[in-house]
Length: 175
Image (cartoon, rainbow, N blue to C red; front, side, top):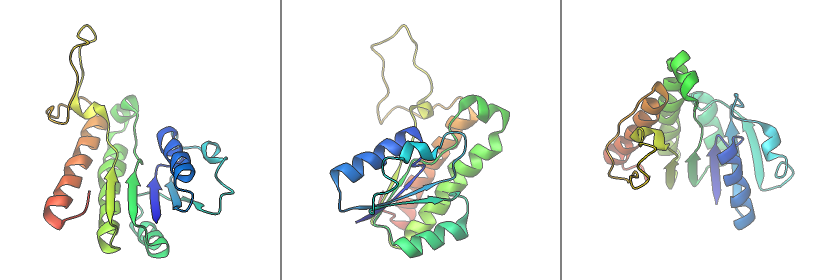
């Protein structure tokens, strides 16, 4: 089993990589990360020498590079943690969030379709549902909560989530 983990040098992605290599030592984990402000190779120092692990510095928007990696690795599963994810940064420069979070997701799903990936997992954020009042601990989000974005970041993540569902309905991408 080969799994491509995007954004795997970030906090959540790297913990996922460690968990998978620990729980499934026979799986091959290929970590793809652009190493922007949120990604750091030091988060992966404990697995860099593992023969079941490979790190590739790559932008998920780089269609040619992503296709080449999928051709080489022939992944069974893709888990997309890659994202521009800082609300304040999204207000300063929304376009980079749209590029990475929507276009990058599209590139990954196109590669997943082309190379016969068996399962695609999109990692989202609670930000797509908006805000909850701090004085109402009885309120919470569910899968049925309507999307109510409040920043370019949350809008770009919601857009990616909707695109994933469209690929499922239109192309049968297993998500």
